[in-house]
Image (tube, rainbow, N blue to C red):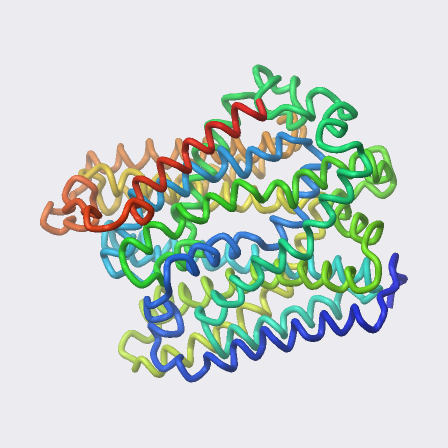
Length: 539
């Protein structure tokens, strides 16, 4: 074992152990309900909206959200809040009001399956393979983060920690499928708040409260919009246009509206209204998450100067573990570690269940074994869970090469989600988008991101965040242009084939019978009002 910076007592290990046993028991308790592929992959579409909403958000509360966002708060200051506001809320509302009717109403089992119906098999196949690659690369973030925590706080080796985390997730996802993952994610959501909120309170106390923190930080670390007229005027080194186009439009909408990891939770809802409200309801607690992440990261600038860029210990991902070691006594340390482990396993389980569904339905069933029984596909889902986790163990070591997990994640999104959003946007709102237009648009966008990543030097952009935002924008732009050009010269689908798949050819859903607090448009409008108010307050 490596030397730990804190020495947990028996009670700390007991709390961690009890949590591990509990999440496994949830999977065991739900095993009897996993009788069909639909039960395992989509929970039989029977889960209430408030549960899918918390699971929707919790699936995003993985290693990136905890360690990565605290690290970004340290590196970029309050500008990190953009990831929670313009980088999330408009897209979450858009998903609920405009896109979930197509996903849920068409009865597709995955995002690639929708692409097959709207475009063609080639588009579905390319997206399925690229998304499967992305999910296992993403799940490596959670394993790496969990290993980092156990190494720093408990002194465990990185390899032991990675394997332990992988085994726990394998057991409860492999047994209970998506339902087990969703119910554990709800529990993990509350556990994360209980276990990590004391960090915010104690760190703010030591830096003089919120106003004291802002007064002691550099001016460009204290406002989210002021100073964005130029890239040099703010902590993130990204100008207004880069934030709006790169993060607020392409990366945000690309992730929240097309990433099957989160969309899968909404598709498990019990009815259309619950499916639409899943992402909208989740947007409200999403706006509160900077309290747990960005604020402690900003306080750590003052409390942990040894993590600065000129330090030998300049790993920003260490900010949260070091804050925990600084503030948490015996017992509370166990609870805090458990909260982090919950977030990591939540993120990893989300990626694994998404990978399992895509592999089984969109790759294995589509290209390898088309006529097997439902029981066979259920078995294949469990086998692919094992394979996905094994691959994730390998990708955990890739993450170690990045100074900030957020940079790693945004790089992946630029490759996969940005061009995918372009294809979805045209496919859902432009009936003349042709099958081959969708395929070549998706391919060209992905290639554009790859070329920019490989051939532009690292110092071409003012910061890693700026590079990710602009790469995403150009990948999106290339996909849009190529799809339009190809669609004008290739055969388009008949309008009769696009009913239920294109906005202008689909019957509008009426929610007049619902009370106001269940209407997606009303909840979405309230979310946008709160979003605007927060931007004005933090300007």
